[in-house]
Image (cartoon, rainbow, N blue to C red; front, side, top):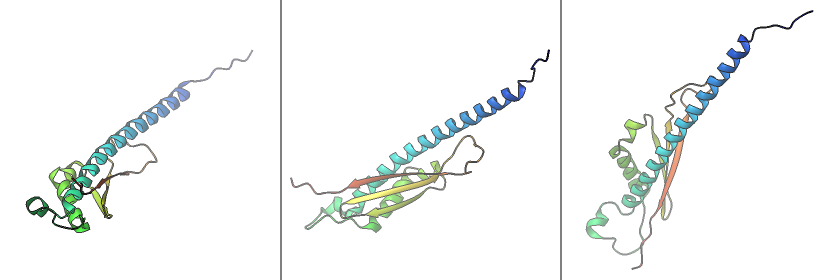
Length: 144
């Protein structure tokens, strides 16, 4: 009578390898999600600063708005966003951080991109994937 005996070691090693890859994927996905959440908060703050200071600049606090519509300039908004990112230490926390500012008639939109700092490396995945977030703020004058 012939028995079917074999080694289960290759099967166990294969399942262990799959389990390790699954753990690495979950850990990296969680790290990327948390970094995106941090960038999201940073983008919201940068958009608020860009909308606030981009609408007439710092002189609005000393002299008021004057007459006419509240204007947002792209250059002032971009400078305000860059200042905010520097003041908050964003460039230290997210090496390789880049931003883009777009200005509409009453809206400032900030898009941030930074290489993800992932704790593990999954075979076949990019070495430095980019994580992005965006935030926007609207500036209007109340008629009080």
